[in-house]
Each structure stands twice: as C-alpha cells, then as structure tokens.
Amino acid sequence: METYHLPDNQKIVQAAAVLVDNGRAGTLSRLQEIIEFSKEMNFKRLGLAYCYGMEKDATLVANILRESGFKTIPVSCTTGGFKQSEVNNQSQINSVSCNPLAQADQLNNETVDITITMGLCLGHDILFNKHIESYTTTLLVKDRVHHHNP
Image (cartoon, rainbow, N blue to C red; front, top):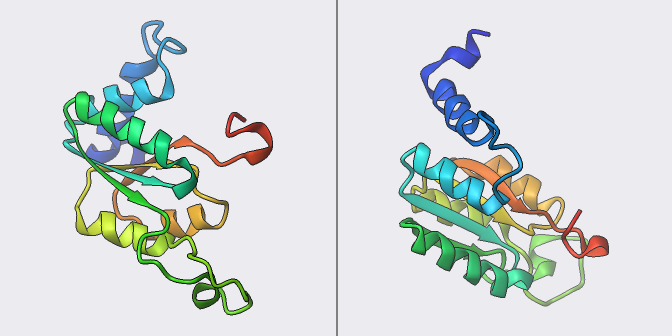
C-alpha cells in the first residue's frame, strides 16, 4: 500500500481514475483515453514507437495527437537501418531489421513524457519496454491473425 501512496504513483492512479470513475468507463476509445490521461498528467511531449508496417496509421495517430495540442515524436521500428543479419547472429536475412533499442534510445534522447506503442513485434516490444525510460502505454498490439484487433 505504501508504494501506491508515493506521490508519482498517486498522480497516475488519480489521472487514470478520472477516465473510469463516475460512469466514464467504456465511453472513450483507447486513443481518447490516452489523450485525456496525458492532459490530466500535464504531459507535453508524446513519443510514438511504431512498426513500419503501420506507417499510415501512425501518421494518422501522430496528427490526432498534434491536433490535441501535444508535441509528438514518432519513431519507426526501422530507425538506424541495421540489417537483420547484423542484429540476429543466427539470421541470413540482409534486409532492414526492426531496431527497438534504437527506437527507445531516440525517444529517451527526446525526453518524452510518455511513449505510445503501436504494433511492435513480440520480442521487439519486450526489448523496447526494457530500455525506454518514459511512462509507456500500448495503443495497438501486433496480432496479424486478427488484423491487430484482438
């Protein structure tokens, strides 16, 4: 219980409660929740870590976040341009690999208040979350079987 009552944790608990208390649960989309939560937390700089395969959707989300008043920093998973064979010593594939560590580094250098992830591959999301220094939430998980609509 002590940990919940630390000032930083209380701020998050209270901002999240604004989204679900008083009958608001289920009335906002996930993106609307992120926007309202970010405003409640007084966040200004939002990172967007996305899969290059979702470039079109990430652009749309980044525009919505900007229109909502946030400085938005989108970073594709292919940042850095490493070959897959360079990242994975068991791979013979020479095309550009995802680079979740560079994604996290770039957003850490931008000192974003929160990072929103969109469609990072399993494993890549784990590495990304391990290395990102900001608060992080997921807007969209990659689920190719269900067209990213689990």
